[in-house]
Image (cartoon, rainbow, N blue to C red; front, side):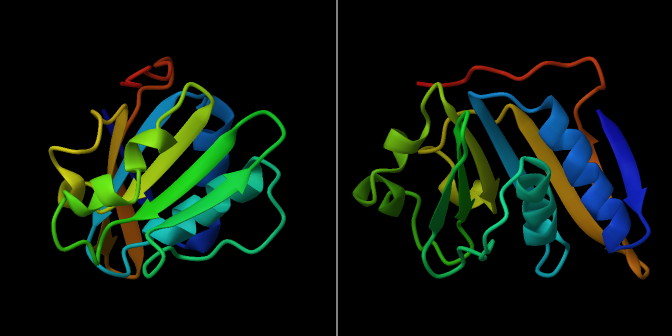
Length: 148
């Protein structure tokens, strides 16, 4: 697993492009890190790289935002406000993990025991005025198929 320093938002946008170019469904990606570490910024860059041009909202209050793209669907989850992983069962989260979906999950540790295994587990942290991203998949690694 690789680590990268992102000096600014432009570097995060470039990383989003790189990850989007390699991501194929089914894929479950965890995005961990402190508040303001850039998780939603990376998701926004990823979606833009996939060709999505509409607004990309943080799902902090809705828990899930879904983006229907021509070839597949991207589900963006933010579990920060989740009180208990079992709450995910009540919103039908298992229905999101399909063979034609990419799931980008902020705060995946809050869904432990309910979420499927992560294919990619990224950790974003503050590093001065920039960020570090750890857990990047190797350049030659494919996408997993952890669909239950």
